[in-house]
Image (cartoon, rainbow, N blue to C red; front, side, top):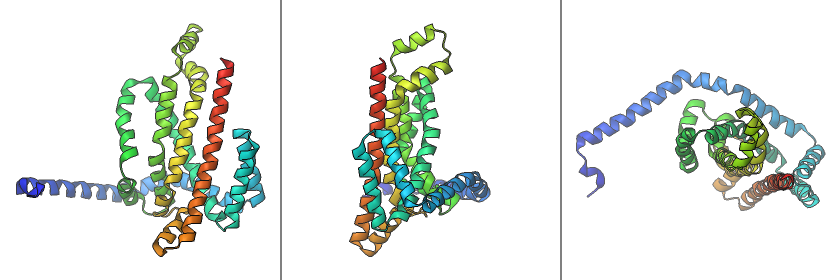
Length: 294
């Protein structure tokens, strides 16, 4: 016997009424406040569009020069610099430069947003056990709930476009930087904190001069994971109007173009490896510097 048949008809009808009530209430909310919420995100959309246009308008040699400089500043490794430049040259050679720059733009904006929002939340969690207990179930839900589930209310509120895709990417990618910021600050040596308190440091001074600097390697590990998870969402974000390397992959899936999907997939992998190595090497350098100072 089916499980639902065990319930009385009245209870099943009540459940259906509850679902309808939730649907109608959210629909009314989206109609009443959708335009205001969309206007709230207009500055973010403006920044994303300007950054994408800037990357597309910049000549490719300058992009490669900036990429090489960032790779060198982050890793101090000529191998990584050369590998990053060669990977971007191959992306351009195979005709994926425009989509790659669109992907870099949305990943950059997403990472900035996740850092700006995630690190303060992580700090609050580290300073308060109550905040940590309240936030952990939320983070668990953000990491485990299928992305298509929270795309439904986002699309109802904002429609199809760049901002819904950006919000979806941020929801999926922000938990690591929050968790690891919290973990990094909580793992700071208590004797070091007590020494700063002995010198009369305030809570803000302890956070700014002791806890954050010592937690930076762990925080950068969170940033690294946030970037990786944001890149993993590129294809799904392209389904709701976000340009980038995910669009050709969707086209390849629908038309069974193996080469198109393979090349664009490898381009996403190349971006992931480059960002991963740069942030990892920078985190290791911070760790070594901290160990030397001790």
